[in-house]
Amino acid sequence: MVKLSTLSIFFLLGSAISYGQNIYVCNGLRENGIPIDSKSEFHFENFSACNLIAYRGSSDGNLMLSISEKQDDNTYSPTEAYSLTKDNSSGYYITDVTWFRDGKYLLSVYSNQQLLASDSVLIDVNEDDAIENSFLYSEDTSYPSSNYSDPSSTFYFMDSKVEFCSQFDDAGLPISKNEFNTGETVNVFVTNGPKKFKHNFLIIYIYKKKGKNYDKLVFKETYSVDPEAESYTFSHSFASNGNYLVSVVTGDNIWVNDGYLTIKK
Image 1 (tube, one colour):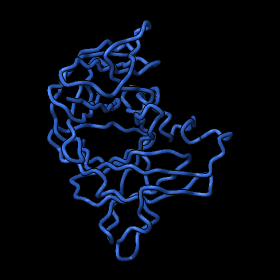
Image 2 (cartoon, one colour; image 1 turned 90 degrees about the vertical axis):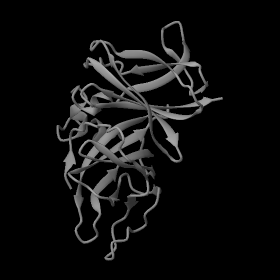
Image 3 (cartoon, helix red, strand yellow; image 1 turned 180 degrees about the vertical axis):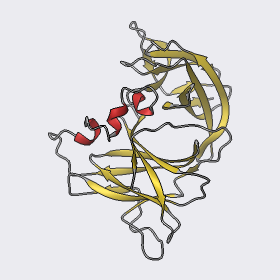
Image 4 (cartoon, helix red, strand yellow; image 1 turned 30 degrees about the vertical axis):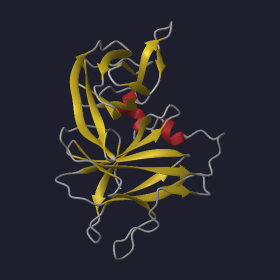
């Protein structure tokens, strides 16, 4: 399988996104094409472990798998990107993925700038916390870490956050929360500190959850930002209650990060 060292994530308005039903994390494929031991949680005894990721769906171009790791503040940071290769006997698009540490991971499949499917998996490996994870922090240019300093890569925004608040502390930092009342002004705080944005524009997409999916676009706006700044804040008022996803990309369609919030009556 071919691993991609760079990844630019795009959002296409009006696209239909499938959450989970077409992505399989498994231990291989049977001769009849059925995934082996496909599930959403894996426990391994080794210091690292491997799964097969299989996606079933139509594609008009090259497919790409993005893997993001859940952080302590419930945001996801991208860690790896793979190209998916079609297995002609089963019809699945597949790649091998090696896990190096415990965590919850978000799997997203893209084709020609369009998000096709997304799902999550919980991984438990018998890791030794005293051993540094050389995969994520390697200086080898074949690894994603080589793009952490490149503003044209989504990995440049590994430490970014999208936070929500009603007020700020004395240092100007948000007093974060994720629940607000209908009509209440919500401050959306986007930060890439300690790195500067190095981009002139941020595009904000707000999706409302409909059923199980965040696929109802209710807001889109492009904001001019100081490329030498580390953070940017804008305000938004939600007219109706519900669960919302706020997604931030640069003016060049490079994914920065997402944030989730709930609006109550």
